[in-house]
Amino acid sequence: MHVTLFGLGEAGSLFAADLVAAGCRVSGYDPAPVPTPRGVVRHSQPDAAVSDADLILALTPQADARRALTQALDALPASALYADLSTSAPAVKRDLAAIADGRGVCFADVALLSIVPGNGMRASALVSGPGAARYVALMRPLGVPVEAIGTHAGEAATRKLLRSVMMKGLAALVIEAMRAAEVADLSDWLWGNLVDEVTAADEAMLARLVRGTGTHSVRRLHEMEACEALLDDLGIDPVMTHSTVESLRRIPEEGVPAVPSG
Image (cartoon, rainbow, N blue to C red; front, side):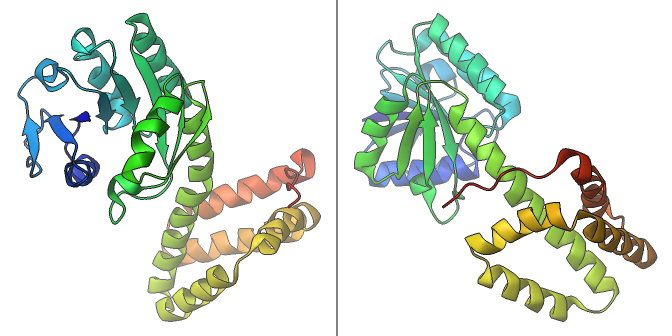
């Protein structure tokens, strides 16, 4: 299989190494002065990079996703599959799919659910769009854990971003708490406590967090207002904590989402 990579940065280079090791013929294009991974034939122009490619993997930021697709659209082989792996909004993925469809190019919206460092191309993924089934057929034999979830571009991106609301938000909350703990000289205690809580977490705990907020929103609001005051006193801008306060103020009127049974 001939695979072309648009983007040879951290993720692209790791994908490239795995594809080469799997026996694929790998071409690449990246206008940035990044190193060329071993075994990759790098081209100075995108048109040349996609010549007779079976699969094009675009590993770019959202800001470059449209340009990555359109830069060689006229040169893409009619039989090629174009897979966009950028972390982009669903609307962006739908726009890309429409552009590809207008030129008769099969498109796949790929959402990576685990980090690429340490996993390479075998990072778990979801794929949607007209080319979803074809992407699975090409990548699963290479050991890629990917699941097709629908034929509409944007479905995979929606699931990834919904998950990111919590996962990236959690990281921001931990960072804010640890910054305050440093000032209070309590870093070791807080880190240990958080590790214990996360290690013990299960579905029941997650359900209690949601349902308990609906039941005890007023008490939790007062507690988080105290947290906000503490961070102010410590000289830490309570960006995430203030957002929690504002969220809790809305609970009496808006309620909490239903927790799926299971």
